[in-house]
Length: 414
Image (cartoon, rainbow, N blue to C red; front, side, top):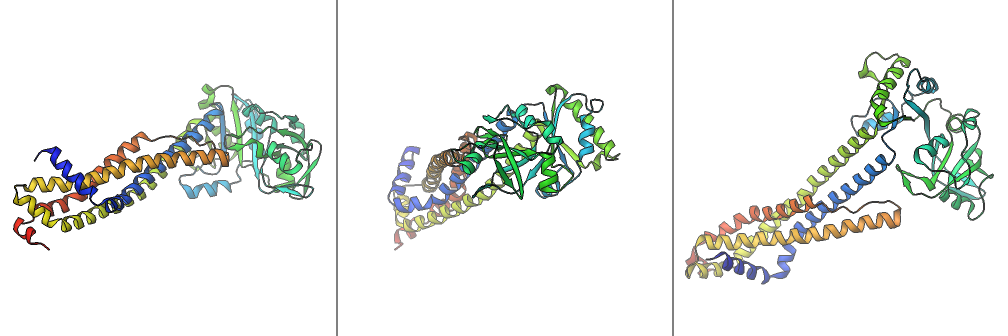
């Protein structure tokens, strides 16, 4: 029999039981949709994070306390480290130690809420240098002004708030000059930031910035920093600056063995590498889990094909009696399995793209999370190929079972 005839018979066999065919490919569709969704959202998140990191420029470094994390559990230990202190900042500010540094600012995270009158709001609160933030992010208050280095040295209780924070606490009235409460302390609002959306993982409109010295002394009661930001004169100076920072901090901490460093340095390149690695690992892990669903779908295809072979035993006997060969029968049922899974692959790719676009749209419109829709062409082609291979693998055994039937016994089958 010709390929065209075998294909026509296979399609006729599938369309004769539309509901069963649809249920057969359901597992394949779900598996393919999951793969497309995972890869697409993963690519979108990686692009979002990459854009955020590169938006700062290659001349910014981050010094983090503690040992460099080697796994997920290490991040918690790093967050609790207290190895970066005032004397380290003073040493890093000396031109003799780090000659290419042009700006440096330590930072501390401040958990809690802010309140004004009877209103309470929970924004992102940080102890930082407001002027440094302005220079790095190129963001400046739309009302009032930033607090300066004098306010930091004097540990003044002043704050710069985002536009969303102002709206939540003050509504349409002015905020500059009024006092808000953080923990049990009053802070005078000196500036209001515009609502610029997400910049380097920070929602500028949802921030409250206070002097890091004030946060340490009056809010947290600590003498260390959670992070230190440093800007160099040019991206070309980054490698030399890293060496200078390492030499300076090792001397300050009496470290002779680099393997025992109680700090680590992040650059734009190292952050991008970390992000790519983490997203890649998560995508592979989740895709492996989804592959189990495809395997289950393949078993479902095999079971249904066995049912189909049993129901059509007399048809097989009749076709063999009028001249159909074993290869004709084998090809017919194998084609049915491959066509089923291939159709499931196409439907899965289409629905996966629709759901991925929906996730990106909802994240952007309702959660202010600018997630781009990225259609994973590689994953789509791979998924379609996997679907066809699953049909081939799981369809061989039922097809061979059909091809081996004795025509006389098949015609007698009731």
